[in-house]
Image (cartoon, rainbow, N blue to C red; front, top):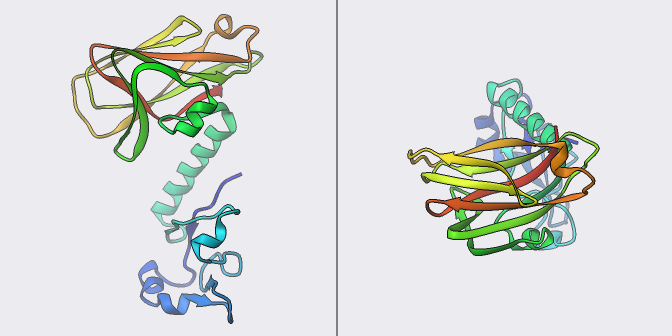
Length: 218
């Protein structure tokens, strides 16, 4: 299911809608709650103080975009790609988030959580390593999706159940950005197993991964 996190003004531009925001963000009678007017979400969204939502799912940030704009189509395509990724996900761990890492039996030596360019991650120092346990589906074609940062040279070994899967080499070009790679997991590597241990070992300096580490159905 696509999670909609944007609002589209109706019969006016974004700027006109924002310029008259006091007419489009209306308090509900005597309640300390507000609803929208002249959007595609009229009558559905109710905004209340943050402290009242501690037991409910809630949204804090909303994008305001114009219907049929290039931004709208680009955003919808991006959402559909992300939804397809979620649908294909077998298991995932939010790297650098201790709660989720503990649920996936994080282990390691000379390793630490980091935040870089808005993404949480985990890095290991020279002679260090870190690992997670993730579920797989041996009757399916499985893959491992990893997000790397373009911030260092050297190599990072990727091991699965004590077998080398791949070695990611980083070019010596510094860029404040990320890229994702998906590595197929061979049938022999996961045969008869419902989970795998994925281990990362840096070669030639401090290296790591970011974002969400996933096992996928390919």
